[in-house]
Length: 94
View 1 (tube, rainbow, N blue to C red):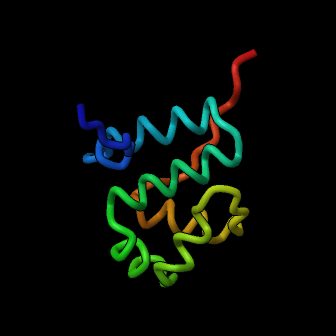
View 2: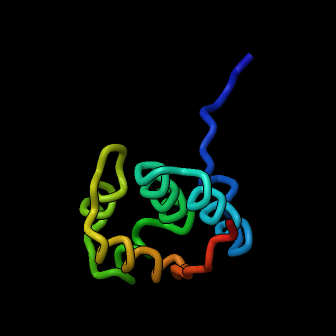
């Protein structure tokens, strides 16, 4: 039996799925999970396209969005904009 490695990027094929995935990770994950999720989304859209839209090089993007990376907030904001996302703050219910 041949198996293949699961890659979430293979399933992030529309804006709604991307938004749902990122919102779930934002709600349930930690900093590393969020950076990783943004990396998965960038990979699904295409690192070359994201690099062009952010003005960052592909190697810089891979490094910034890799496991254990601690990218600058400005980098995260550039990538979020390039993937068609935005940050929105809602009051928490207690």
